[in-house]
Amino acid sequence: RSTIFSMFTRTKCCSIAGMMRPSMAEANSALSYKKFVHFALEETKKHTQLIPSSLQENCNCLKAIDGKTELQMHSFASPKIRLLRSLSVEGSDGMQVLDFAIFPRTEFDLPIFCANFFTTAVMNIVVLDLNPLHDVISQQDYKEKYYKHLIPLGLKYAELLPWGGRITTESMKFFSPIIIWTKFPPSEQKHHVLYSAFKDYLKSWLELMDQASMETDVSQIMCNLESQHRYLTWRAEKDPGHQFLRRLVGETHAKEIIRSFLFNGVDDLGSKTFINYFPEYKSEDGTINQKRSMIGKSFESRPWDARGEFIVRKLLRV
Ligand code: BLA
Image 1 (cartoon, rainbow, N blue to C red):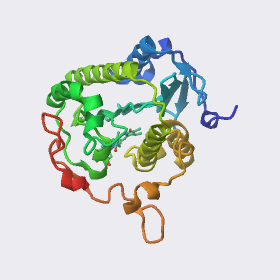
Image 2 (image 1 turned 30 degrees about the horizontal axis):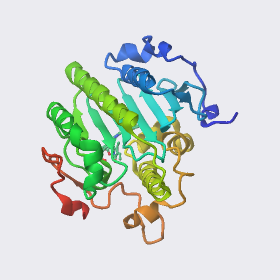
Image 3 (image 1 turned 30 degrees about the vertical axis):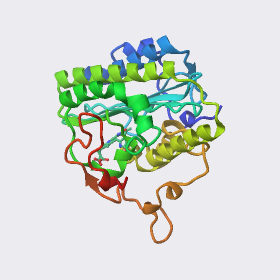
């Protein structure tokens, strides 16, 4: 069977249990993200049956161009989950990445679980959120439905993991009032806090999933479908990790990983293009402007107040 993974040298295929055995890379970094993935899969299995997705056979370990950095991928589906997928990267120099997301089936208007951690020997860049499927700045009802009871949880972690400073302005529309956006130099204590936050956010998402009932109204399902496709289109084009991924595995493989694995669905959940969704990125010759942000970076401090209200609406024109 031809999958994107057949293009790589497959190093070893490991079981989930095997993931917990210390590897070479782990010996270099005590603050590994492997236990995050292990927890997420075990916890999710308590709520639903995870079926290995056809994108891969349960577990794939791949080597980057440098011959040292390891990439690990997992992907699953379940009755309410269209795709749960995880990419983790471990370099020999303390570099680590976790990109973990859960996309609901389009009969559900559940948020998208999103954990993005990028770590080097000197810095951690962290995004952790239940990304809203629909607009939480102007759609009060959607915000109430999914986030009202989670505001105290968000406030707790916003204090422990303070706002990371100016950020791509356009990204903010994809974030919720409980977004954790933070940067910090590696530390055992912060790693521990981040692990707690990850566990609490995942458990919260799983509870929302348990409670979610299937939408039967076709127009509402279409609406969910388009929102998810718009999200995938944004991230498949503008995610800050792409450049890094290209350096790791080369242009062609990076594109495959981004479009077929990380943001699977971008090419088949809808036919609108990036320019259809984000016309402000159209350059004079009709192609997509390569800038990550047209507005620039904004939000020196957290733009959500303690009640979960967005406080600088005019920047996003909402
Ligand atoms: C930086 N990653 C960032 C930043 C954000 C995110 C907000 C800060 C830079 C910025 O202002 O854009 C994450 N942005 C998101 C997420 C959404 C979004 C999750 O809009 C969702 C809607 N990150 C990865 C992977 C890699 C990675 C897989 O997820 C590498 C393989 C790396 N992220 C990475 C790097 C930076 C970064 C290198 C710093 C680059 C920069 O600041 O330009």
